[in-house]
Image (cartoon, rainbow, N blue to C red; front, top):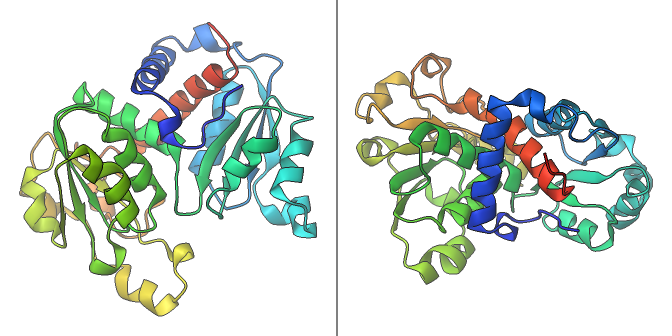
Length: 305
């Protein structure tokens, strides 16, 4: 039995296989329509979510399985003081696989230690979000045809952005990737990402504050929102939330083939006028998320089609 807690739990070969399976599901959905008949997915979301929770549920339903779970810790026994470990042991009696989101870093890992079914980390605090990373990788692969040899700029909240941390970790294992980290000083990429991932591999990266100056060199622009829920001080959030706003004017110097990604939800860091730009791919990301999660469910349940 395997879990997915961190993107590095998967080898590069396994990631490539998941992308290939997701693309096959896109092309041949009927082939997979009953692959998980009789199986149940539990979504344990101790933190609010729209895309991740619903895409997991849609993924299982499209595989012919069923779903159960909760979307708010207040509606579970956690509100009575039940531990994550006890909750997961209980749910293991009812479901074949668990997707879990939790505001505390490490909670899905703790859950996996006692679970009797596979556990998927659907986001833990500011730490990791491996299935969003798989979604991002699938999107980049479909847009570029490869996961090698490009420059990616991460812009916004790089300190608390678990999607950023996961994607950097994944891309660091592919050839020819160059990173540009665009943020105010208060929201820079954490030192542990540089010290544990980038520096040991000698990967090229730079930290800058100007989106406009970086724009011409980027092949991928990965926008993020400033996350109010991660701040301890509302004044700091209000001061930093509008630091970067992507609009058509800022895209004038971007490459015609550049692609814009965003894990969503957005607040105002991308204006709606950008949505019509052919380089905008964030709603394609949403669609891709369902298919790569279908592929992951099949893999962890060891279902062959």
